[in-house]
Length: 165
Figure 1: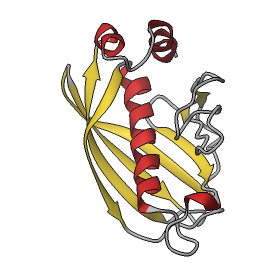
Figure 2: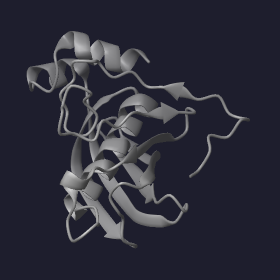
Figure 3: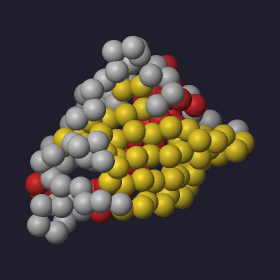
């Protein structure tokens, strides 16, 4: 698997212990338990998809692959742009099979900030042999903290904690 380069400084992004998100929540017993690191340009996550999220035989379900890519792009938008976000659109290219119980690396970067309300991101998913297996592009709505709170996305203290790091 890809090793973390020694010549870069990486920061682990914070996730609340009681967070229940399917993708990143440590409190969700059925979730992916994704964690994230950043070097300030890219956000990435290493994970292994458990067998209960399989599609055909030993392959990861395409919906789970899409979730992984959406989540890593979302964390990239939140932390690199310091904004609460929601996914507007996303397209995924499934290039190679992804298998359960194998270590994967998902990474994402901002490709364009179109306005103060929209950004484009790119996400990629690699298998344990460093082969690109899926690639996604997404458009994300950038929300002011008070709008995110009003919409019920997160409480004010959660929003503040996300944007501080």
